[in-house]
Length: 294
Image (cartoon, rainbow, N blue to C red; front, side, top):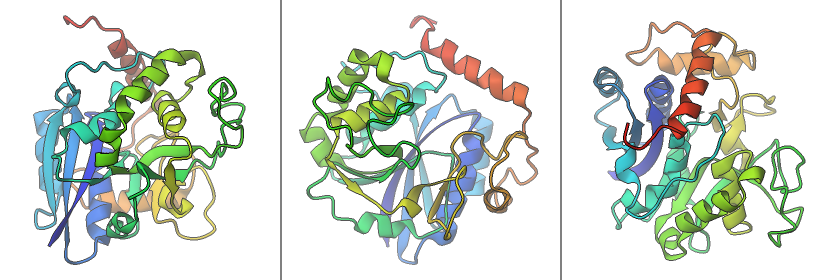
């Protein structure tokens, strides 16, 4: 049996998304493979950890919990931004430092995803010449996109038509990442360009790894907000998540999400109203400016 290594990051609010994601991976995984899921957790309750453990197929899946602060290497500090994104979005930057060194290929996934194809095929991509493999962001495409791109591309010495990837799915060459000190470069990049970093972690990754990534099929990161001409390999629930009453994108994608969720300990889950969603966003912002001694 070959074990595939996957890393995710989740807080207590989104653990429900992770349960559905893992179930979708298990269901579509080819025989002869198992998965080890490293979960960078941001205050996930013991109750929800138990529920997730009960939701997985232990013949296929192993869970390894990592407390968020413990994965940040000594001497490195998180960039400080004023967005409403949770701090755990930065945790993907530290994966090559807490994963055992002998593991040279890791798949990072955002938790707001559902996998519809065998993820073992992703690990077959040749990353010998690349730091990462990713999918082009269909909303932004190039650095010169006026609302979400890298607007100071000229000052950074980069071409306006440089292709821009989404960071929700990343296959990492961890050895090459460490050799090139990618994490340090990204943190410095975000700190030095805060006013241009609309999507902070994504901005830094795209600038530092410009033209150094392997482009995967768009079917491996299909946004739920866009129509699908063919069945995607992976649905990415960007913007409103299907756990909210206000989700108003593809009903078919929503049905797929709930078909996997119903196979977990959250099978009786009821959709969340808007007020709770806004409270979470406010908490995300406040946590970034909480004094370190609290």
